Length: 73
Image (tube, rainbow, N blue to C red):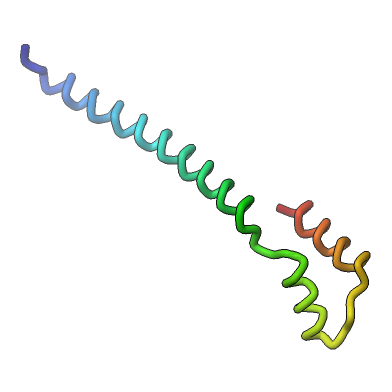
């Protein structure tokens, strides 16, 4: 049972394609999970941003900013 050269090359190419596709979807799922677990911005950060600008935000303003952030993701 010996492999021809073209069979060996074909197996390597197929393995690379399967690895790339699997790695892409695996990394994509991991990143989505991490972003859901640790969102890049939260309400506490928005309140701190308003405080740095010297304003005290209302709850409606915080919700509006959060909604615009999540809508644009």
